[in-house]
Each structure stands twice: as structure tokens, then as C-alpha cells.
Image (cartoon, rainbow, N blue to C red):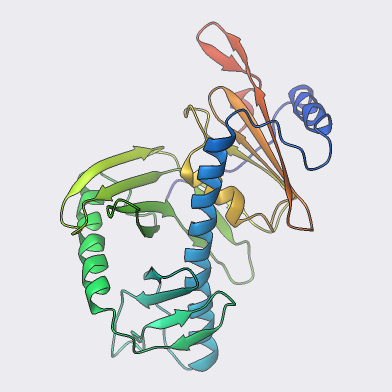
Amino acid sequence: MMLMMHKYSSIACSFLVLGGILLMGLRASDWSETNAFDDQLELATWMDSYQTTIDQAKNYIKERYPNLNCIPREWVCIQLGTASWYTYTLESKQNGGCIQTIYMVDSSGKVEENNVDIREERELYDRIIQNVADLMIDVKADPRIQFVPFIKRNEDNTISVWMLPGQEEEEGGDSLAFYGPEYHFKFESSGSHVIEQDMINRDLLWGVPLNRGREIWLNYQKEETITTGAMYFAWRYRNNFNRVFIETRRHITAIQYYDDGSYTLSQMTKKHRGDRYICFDPNRRG
């Protein structure tokens, strides 16, 4: 697995960005495309709830079944209604100690084992997961990377699946959160046929330690706009960093978080020189 670690950029340009942020005022925003940010943030918060549901179910299993030989890594969530999520593991190893049970997680985080009949939804989601696995082979996704699937039914009854790099937890060491490769597949309502697909940063994976520093710089210099994965990373790990910078081809976006749950947003346009947009020396960062 190729890991490319974050390095800070030149002092002069850093002061330029920070100066722009200080001019914003308290809780203000000068985001140039507010609707685009709102849409991405809404999706990122949904993804965060999806992953948090899985984390809560894993913790429940660890507490209730302390002698289990393994905790499954691959999970799927189904949201029925606005408050309750149902999550289940894709792995079932009778001899290995893994268990396969449906867990219901409500909006308060309460977890309970549940025998609700969601066979129809599970058959649909399982079919989609298998189809996505085949598609990931077709697009030559790096098999060494553990991708986390996010499955969402859209308003038009199509189904979107995002495959994003997951988090690697190390006991007694740094926990690493990964970003870079992103895959998006959209299926028709039966989940049998893909009607759209998109991918970015297929060959670059970045690892970020979650217990070091209070600022992080996300490198998306080849992208025109902030991606779904970038926004998800910025929201998912908002408690690990005070400020997140996201650098795309033409802009640098800074998100500042506060203890009361609010945030400040600022975007700066990079200088255009010839066929390049320059502010930071890309050779100074991984």
C-alpha cells in the first residue's frame, strides 16, 4: 500500500491563507458556491452517520461478546425512515467466532439486536455489493486498499455506492485515516445494472495520523472542485483537527471548527501562471 504523508508548505503562502481567514470574522463564510458546499456537506454528514452506525455496532459486539475471536470488518447499513439504521456484517465465520446478526441503531446511538425482516433490502444490497466488487476489479482498483462502501437510495429510486478508503486502527500506535482514491457507482433500482460510474485519484493514497497536530492539508490538486471523499474526510474527522485545508486545482478551502459545533468556511483562489494555478510548492508536500 502506497502511503504519502502530509507535509506543510511554504511559510509565505501559509500566511496569505491565514490572513484571508482572519478577515472573515466570526462564523462567517465567503464560500463562492454555497449550494455546492451544502450538497456535499449533507452527503458527508449522511456518510458520517452511516459509518458511526457501524462503529456503534462493533463496540456493542465487543462489550457483549468479549470472547469473540474476531470482529467483522465488512458491514452494510440500511436506513429505514429518518431515525433508525439497520446494520449487518457481510462476514459469517461459524468456526472463526464471527457472528452475523442485524443490529438496529436509533438516532440516540442505542444499539440492540433485531430480528426485523429486511430480507428484500438485504438481497438488494448484497447484490449491489457483489456487483461493485466486480466493478472494482474491472476498473483496476488497488486490492491492497480496504475500501468502505456507502450505499444510498436516491430520491429517483436509483442507488448510489461510494467506495472510499477506510481507517486503520493500530493498538499502541497511530490511527491512520486514508484518503485519495474515490469510486462512485450509480445503479438502477434493481441493483443489477450500473448506469453511471466515476473515479478520481486512482493511483494516489494518502495516510493521515489522527493523533498528531491540529491542522491537516488535503491534497486534491488535480481536481477542479472539492470531492465527496474530501468533504467526508473533513467532516468525519472534525474532532481530530481544528482546521482542515483542502487544496484543489484552482482553490484552497479552509474549514475551521469550534467547540460549540459551528464552523467557519473560507475559500481562496490560487494565482494563475501560464497553464498552472500556483500558491504552494507541490514539491514541498507529499
